[in-house]
Image (cartoon, rainbow, N blue to C red; front, side, top):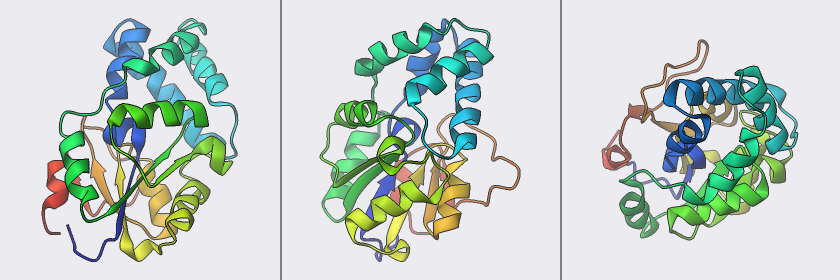
Length: 206
C-alpha cells in the first residue's frame, strides 16, 4: 500500500463481511439469495436519498419472487454475520499505522451491529441512514472523510460492491476492489486502482 494513505475506509457488508452467506441461507439457497441481493442492490443504488433499509429489503424480496417476511428473518440473522477469514488480521495490521472506518448502505442500527461483528474499533461508522443517502451518492463518502478530517488524496476506499467504484470516483477516492465473489464490473463503472479476491493484497505496492 502506498505510504501516503492516512486512513482506509471499507464497504462493510461485502468488503469486510461475508453477508452473501447470510442472505443465501435466509432465502433458502444461493440462487434465490443472489436474485434477492441483486434486486436489493438495484433499489439501494438507484434510490439515492435514504429510504428505510428494511423496507427496501422487503421490496427486493417481493421483486425476487420471495416472501416479504424474509426481510424480518434477515434482520434476525444479522447477529450471525461473520467477517471474511482474512479481515481481522488485515485490520489489526492496518490499525497500527492507519485510521479505519466503514461506509455502509444500511440502517444505523444494523450498521453498528455489523461493525461489531468484525471485532475491531473503527474511527468512523457511516451508514446510509446517518448520511441521508445511499451510495453511490457522494454524501456517505464525504461524511466519513469529514469525520476523519482528511482529504480524498490520503484516504483509500476498499469496495466490496462494484457500484462503489462509481461513487468513489465522484469524490476522488482511490479504490481497491475486494471482489471476493467474482462480480462483473457494471457498464460505465471506472476501473479500480487494484482488483483482488483477497484483502491481503492491500499490502502490495501499487
